[in-house]
Amino acid sequence: MPSGGDRHRLTLPVPLGVTSVRKPRKTPEVRVPRLVGLMAVDARETAEEGEVLLDSPDRPDLDLTVVDYVVRQYPLPDSEVPRWAVVTVWFDFGEGEGDGGAGVREPRQPRPPSGGLQRELDAPGDPFALLG
Image (tube, rainbow, N blue to C red):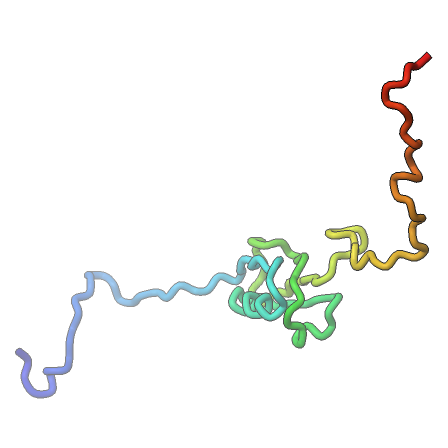
């Protein structure tokens, strides 16, 4: 057992020929995380963890957006981009995309005529009448 000041010193064996250990550098590129389906607040957090920046053409106040959901992103998930590159996200479907902008359908003006199918079909006759 070491005595005095040597008591706290511990020497580990080092393989012969090893003079230093290299710390791996971070690669200059990162993979784009999947942001589609996330709320804005979660998308910002995921982007920061993935070391990319977010931009949104349909939300100039992106930092204040919280509960809107990301519906599209570019570049696509798992693409390799430079660290801290900008990923563009959209929160609304564009013209002719997704749900087609269905929105609220009622009330409709003018109202459809009353009568429903009765107006479209002929009145039923005798089902057993002979054709002749």
